[in-house]
Image 1 (cartoon, rainbow, N blue to C red):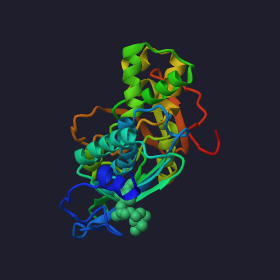
Image 2: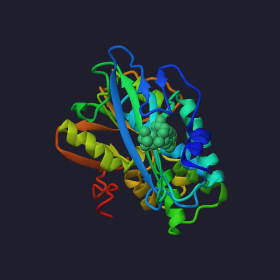
Image 3: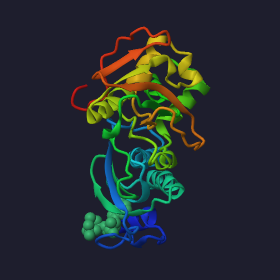
Image 4: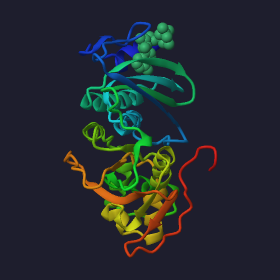
Length: 312
Ligand code: ADP
Ligand code: MG
């Protein structure tokens, strides 16, 4: 199968509203919502670095788009479309069928069509660029947190890291529990509707891709504030809660790959009910730095650690 047959079979879809020209010409042509701002983000997934070669291609397709939609969610953007740059070692039709199924199912669920891309031979590598929109001045950014704001997190943290530790062989988790945390790692849910609902409510937001402490640290740095968080308040699954306390804290605070939203709101703000749990985990303070305490208020040691591709 040649390059163009491959693109036609696995990546070309019927035209949708808002896309005048999609896959098949030199450029896609999108129709902007009058007055809206574009929000654009890219995320690359490299085999061996971001995923294991053995991962189910349906799940890989889902995750490749999910991590990109998560960036739009963190900014409160409405998804409009995405491009896919794909390097493949060989044409493996079973793999392509699974990958495109997982990818396009999530795309359909978010009305975010695949509008173009590039396909080449090479070591397996997936790069997606997402395009979203938000009304002027309404995008959620990292720099708006104010002293006294509450800090919130969606969903649960730490399961993806726990699954990674099981794959690494440092932790044993039984069958059903492992499948649950593995799904958190391989099938993350981007909080797209929540992000949009937080426009005008959240003062700052970010998605947790590299670990809570590091990602919250980006909000603190951009907003020029500090914070205090309660490690015992961090939302966790029953599977993670059954692990030794030190491992729980490592997964919760430094785990990464969670794709939950961390955001700040003025104290007492009314939060939207979007069917995902929201947990208050701390407060923004004037004193720079991040202070972690336990439920009794005792200081908890932490290196402000998060994932850094060039450090680990
Ligand atoms: P060009 O040579 O003009 O860059 P290509 O031959 O790379 O065009 O691609 C042909 C068409 O197929 C273009 O519309 C491009 O956007 C689309 N395309 C290529 N690869 C992909 C892909 N992996 N997913 C979606 N669309 C793709
Ligand atoms: Mg090209």
